[in-house]
Length: 82
Image (cartoon, rainbow, N blue to C red):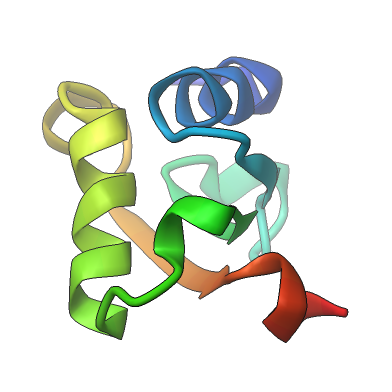
């Protein structure tokens, strides 16, 4: 399948205000549909963890149903990340 991680990062950053996303393949390139993402955004302020994760899933839209099998997700506000 060979997912371009920079495309995934750009999609998250485009869809979530002021987001900074880092996406990796924690199991290595041979398992390219299992990803890990760390997303930092002030948009997460006041949102529950579930709602923060939902924002990322919504941003990824069709990637979550076609290319990404599993996503390990960590979300933070800028204050939490510092």
